Image (cartoon, rainbow, N blue to C red):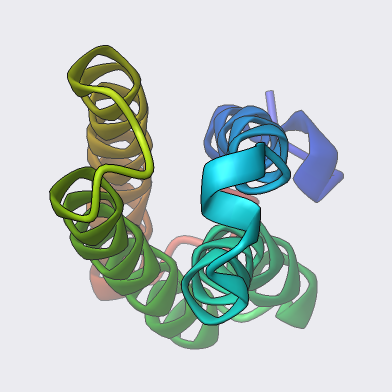
Length: 129
């Protein structure tokens, strides 16, 4: 069955959940005081889901693949920011591990989708990912 809307992609759904968690975290008292880091974390998480959506809507496999690469890179950026938040004592070890695990899961799912899109692109298939 072909996916017709980006909202149906598991990768986008998981990225949305991660973004929701990041916004909740960055509004907490300690982290909210570091506006720059909080903003960077929000932008990185938003970038993940936005690139999945935008790439899907482009309707071309090479472009979708490129946008998925950017989404996966944004997962790495977010993970790096989580280390900063931990090292600055803005978040607990437990919060860090939970969010890091979620970010890694999103990265794996996006990476798997990217590999599937690349395979379809390389074989010339025309169905939706």
